Structure formats: C-alpha cells, structure tokens
Image (cartoon, rainbow over all chains, first blue to last red; front, side, top):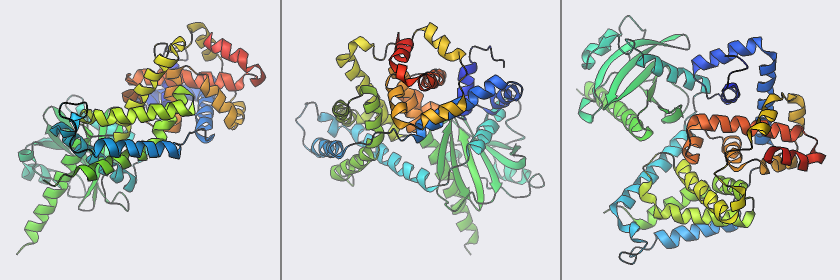
Length: 267
Length: 189
C-alpha cells in the first residue's frame, strides 16, 4: 500500500471504522508506521467521525409521528376482513402471516443480541479470519469424518478439553470433520458442518463468554457469527449462511447436547 | 389456530416504534424538513405494512430503514427534482480532488466538530448519498454491510461514500465558516 493508491482513502476510512479484514489491517498498519501524512489523515478522520457522533445532531421522532404510526398499524393491520381483492387483501395471504412470524422472530432475535455481551470487534475479526483461513485449500479439515464418535476422540491429547460434538445430519447440517485452530494465540477446537453448499465453522474453547448465556449474533463482511454456550464452553458458529439458519443450527446443537446429557444421567 | 392478528399487529407496532427514531432521523436528514420527514416515515410505514411478505426475517431495522430510505428519495425526486436526488453521486471530480489532497489538522477539526450547529450545517450541504452514509454510520452506528443493504449499493461504494463524506465535512468545518457560502459553492459547484 502506498499513499498514491487509488483506494487509499477508502482503505483508511474502512480502517478507522474497523471494517477491514485482518490481512488488510496489517497492511495498512505497516504503511501507517512509516507515513506521517497518512497517520494525520487517520487522526483527522477519527476526529470528524467522533465529532459527528458526539455532537448530538440526531433527530428524535416527534410524539405526533409516533401516534400516527401506531394508529396506522392498528387501523390497517387490525382489520380482519379487508375488501376482497382490494389493496389490503395482502393481510390474509399466508405469506403475510409468515412474514409477521418472521418479524416476531427478528424482534425476539434483537432481544438476544441486547442481552448477550457482544464480542469485541477484534474477536469478531479473528473469528471471521479463522473461517476464511479454513476455506483456503487443504486447511479446512485435520480429521475428515461424518461420525461424531471419530471426530470427538480425535481432539484428545490435542487440546486440553473435550469439545462437544453432535450429529445433526438428520436436521440437514451434516458434520464433515474437525481441526485444530488458533485464535488470539490459543488452541481452539474447530468443528466443521455443512448446510447445502455453505460451510459452518464452530470454534470452541473452554470458559463461559460472560454472565449471559443467551445467544449473541454478529455479522461482518457478509459473514454471520452466532455465539452460544454449551457445557461451560464458548462456541462461535461462523458461516456465510444466513443468520436465521445459523441461529437454528446453534439451537439444534445445544438441544442435541442437552438431550445426550440427559440420556446418560438417566439410570 | 394460535396466531392472532391483534397480537401480531401490536408486535409489529412495537417493532416500528422501536425504530421510529432511526427512521425519522434518516428521513429528516434526507428531506431536511420536519413535517415532510414525518410524512415520509408515515408513508414508509404504510408501505411496510403492504409489503410484509417481502420481509424474510433477519434485521427488521435494516428492512424498515430501506423502505424509509427509498420513500425519502422518492419524495426528493418528486419535490426537489432540480437537486438531482439519488442520481448524482457527489460533487464534480475537480472539487473532490481538492478536498482529497488536503490533510486537515485533527485538533482543529475536533474543536470545530464540538460545535453541534456547525456540524449540522455542514452535513446539511453534503450531497444526499454522502449524507445518507454519514447519518447511517455515525448516528445509527450501522455496519458497512447494513448500510450497503439499505442504500442498495456494494460495500466498496459505502466505503468510498463515507471517505468522501468525511473529507468534505473536514473541508467544510475547517473552512472559515464566515465564508460558508463560498465553501458550499466550491463543493457543489
């Protein structure tokens, strides 16, 4: 990278916003270490960004508008028998109902995000980076097997914990194997699942992520990340799969482990 | 059947109200008038109700803001056609190059940026698509991906719009604000 690159302004902007992948961050930082002018540009950009954010120039919705919105939704949506074929017949279509159901799911999903302490941007970067690395040739799998009873023992002696492994092939998320990975300098277990053509990496390490066990979700550069806890371990599912399916995957993963644990403790 | 129209509409109502500030803020910055922004958001709410079937789960805020954004640009095209709303992606290359070639003093910018009124006036005269990117990023804290989805452009375009928007804000804030009209002319020429 040099100051004369066409995209240097965009790169510095994305650097300020923490929107670059790790490799590009390193490239930009190498350049910044040697370039006073670009460091000043970054400083100036941070100053303007913080200034706009802190100057409290947000407009809040007036109460009158809020009342109008409520009224609109109540009168339009609360009408159970719209004119047949009229402009409001959308209301009765099954698609609308599923749309509302999806809307509710999203609202509930938002609540999850608020509950769970979000990962630091640095950690999100590392997770996405691990996912991208895994997609490079010959890095995805150290142990290739669809059998959880082959994958789980493979980690013994390689990491100092026993990652939970489940078989979700019946639900459409076949296990394809596992590998060792490194995240922030520590060894972590990576399980690899597939959903159609999408690869899902589940990165696992011991220890709770925080006080809230609820799932949290993030997205970065088009990749979705869902955090969940399983048997005292922090698990992050990373994939280009859409967030809804990735959440579903995380729920299935936990439910299967809980069911397995209940089965073994039963006399 | 357990699904109840009344309970769902109240859930929808709370979702829309939860994002009413973000919706109004975006519309208000784009159309630059309180009453018009309220009408645009109200219009967007009706459109959202009619197109619920296009909502496929995921981020409700991004979905709703997309509708608000499109309603704002429709309003601008109808009511401010001479401003070239949505079509013009920024000022001419010469003035852009002038803004880009300068490195501004971070301390001076921080000082000026603390003046909310000054910042507001500077944002107000940015081209619409740059203003939109700045509002969604700095005020709503959205990711590039979310901004790209709302504005209907690739992430690379979001990046360059933010870069240009911030550069122009720096130029506007650093310029002698007594000569603000001059700066406006330089940027919009």
